[in-house]
Amino acid sequence: MLSKLLNDGAGGKPTAGQLLAVAAGVGVATALGYGVYRLLQYRAAQQPPSEWHRVGEVSDLWIYPIKSCGAVRVRQFQCSPIGPQVGFLRDRIFMVVKSADGKFITGRSHPTLVLVQPAFDAQYERMTLSAPGMMDIGVDVKKLLESSAPGSAEVWDQPVTAVDCGEEVARWLSRFLLSEDFGLRLVYYPLDRPTRPVREKNRIHRLLTARDSGALHDATSYMLVSEGSVADVNARLDKPVPALQFRANILVKGPSAFEEDDWKWIRIGDTVYRNVKPCTRCLFTNVDPETGVSSPEQEPLTTLRKYRLKPGLGQSPVVGMQMGIRTLGAIGLGDAVYVG
Image 1 (cartoon, rainbow, N blue to C red):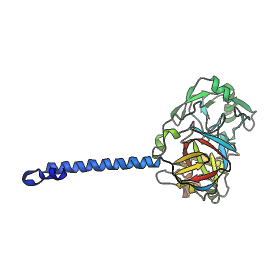
Image 2: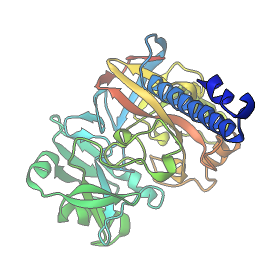
Image 3: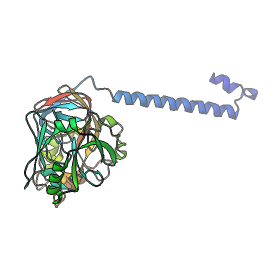
């Protein structure tokens, strides 16, 4: 057909129009072929591998029920679409917001948030909060979910469904964090699925999808770091920091420093995860989880910026990785960690 088109001009020579038509056709075919190639490449990237190799084992597990507050160490957890959970103990399911506008606050601006320590009863239905100089206060999570009408709040200017936790705990938080009787409230995410789209700043990570956004998380519902990476950072610091300061859900023993940067797929127990973005670090990384004080020397962030910056991520260094879950299940301490 191509030779016929080229030979139909006067004297058997192709006309300029025919040449342009042929060039356009070749261009369209090339574009379509490239598009199909990219589509197949993308689909292949979404499929878990058929072969895995062991890289280590789970050495610690944490759930942070209130965004920017203390961690609850657990021996195992279920992996849900919105993050780790044990009963009503779920990751980043609560957050502290301003009474005036519903915007959340974090440890970046209020580092003493880390001193608000949640604990749960044996049935994982009731949460108790403690903080220095404060009487403990309880929050009946099960009753809260069953009896309250949802309202709304914001995470990074994105609206989320939120249930207000009442006046008593609002006053408690305001007194501890602001030394006032009002100004802050505690809200709860009542849904069992993610609802927020990928934040604009994170759209450069093409594997990150809306299903990975979790409950009230910054970016994804799961975060992993290795002991080797923490040790490498600490070897460069005058004052070492605990692994907890990096606020991961999963700590892994065995891999060399920052080996997790290059993992694509991760399998732990019967769960499978996709590495969807590197975990970029902010000022909150400088906050000591034991004292609630931000490092005057801005460490470890200052040191990390000397050797852990990545192209396209500005001045936010990387430690650990953020994961999206692809196969639900449960994981526990000592479980083998495989990558593919």
